[in-house]
Image (cartoon, rainbow, N blue to C red; front, top):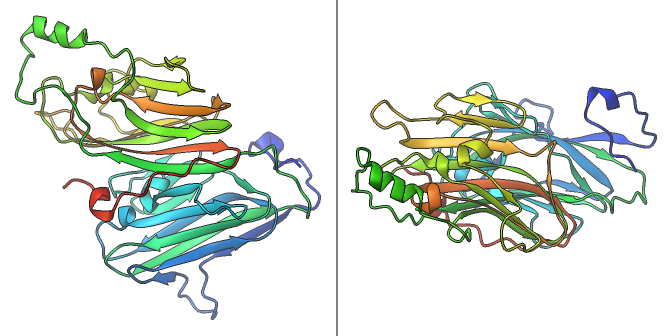
Length: 357
């Protein structure tokens, strides 16, 4: 079975037996109340599919009086009757932007669209062989009005999708990261101290911020990283933290980068917001007197260059050179793998998910 190609070159491919379907929040009474209501604390499935298929596009938007709805509402996805979710993230973070904020941006797999980024789109394909279930959990303090489309394909009975990994997404946060530099120290005019700090080694990756840790066979397809630089420090530029990706238990990363700004395909301490198909800096809040203060969101999607693993993968990044900086780090990782997957750590409680003021 060929799931089809998303490029223009693949559009002429005829696919006998494939059907297009949509689940949506349209008003079943024929009116214009085209949303589903979720009371505070309510969980509800927005999709239950019981045949072979592949979700090709998800669109949603919402209305709520809770300021932090995008971090309080959870999205979970289950494939082929599994008991533990393959996707578990706050709703806003799933669609490519953290901090319980929205922003207009365009990447290939994820987009937030006008008005003011409040229209959410996901184009990651999500195959399943026997069924799929998508759940929304409203942990906000106010009622949620949720609008959605789930566009998917269904395939003839007996179709095998054994060669296709199942889609996964996971949210993580460490607040604050355990930095070692004294926040009160100033060494901008002390070159000897600066060189001493830059020579501090990280030869193990211990203490790095962990974006993803998974077991099994699959491939990592990217992440977005949400950093809140709340601690004023000497040279508090976060971009010198190297990316280190450990594959199949290797003691030293076979994929080792040169800095956070480099992993996210930017350069020279970027302060300009920018979005492209595979990488972007879509939130920057620095000021003239403190260039790195406040909230930042960067993304890198490995669409053309997925990182394959046969047994395990651990995707990490330093929080500043040699993990010297104390900041607020959160991320959402995306990957495909064969089931079963390693169960995720318990989702943080609401108070530990909220962004810093």
